[in-house]
Image (cartoon, rainbow, N blue to C red; front, top):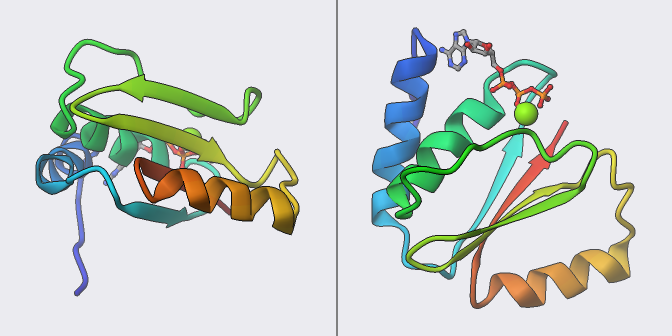
Length: 105
Ligand SMILES: Nc1ncnc2c1ncn2[C@@H]1O[C@H](COP(=O)(O)OP(=O)(O)OP(=O)(O)O)[C@@H](O)[C@H]1O
Ligand SMILES: [Mg+2]
């Protein structure tokens, strides 16, 4: 499936609809160049997941941000974190019970 958006608002709205459908055991991998709209999408997903008044920013310098929504959402930066494989497996374990948003470019 291919979805094309034409504004940040449209991308965020798509994310919100996606977030509404999440149950809390999903893992979402985001790939995209700098400034390609990953964080805008995540902002929508977090809203749809039930966090309506939080500020969502790129976790680039802190690696991971946790949001308490209908379930826990972890927004993880796998790029600057230089996460190695064992650590990634640990994260995948966490992902079995929580939504994790992986952010990779
Ligand atoms: N269709 C679109 N969808 C999302 N963002 C868009 C769109 N068109 C323009 N933009 C703009 O592009 C920028 C995307 O920024 P965003 O922080 O989401 O990117 P990013 O992929 O998270 O970047 P980084 O890798 O630096 O964290 C925003 O300034 C947004 O307003
Ligand atoms: Mg970002």
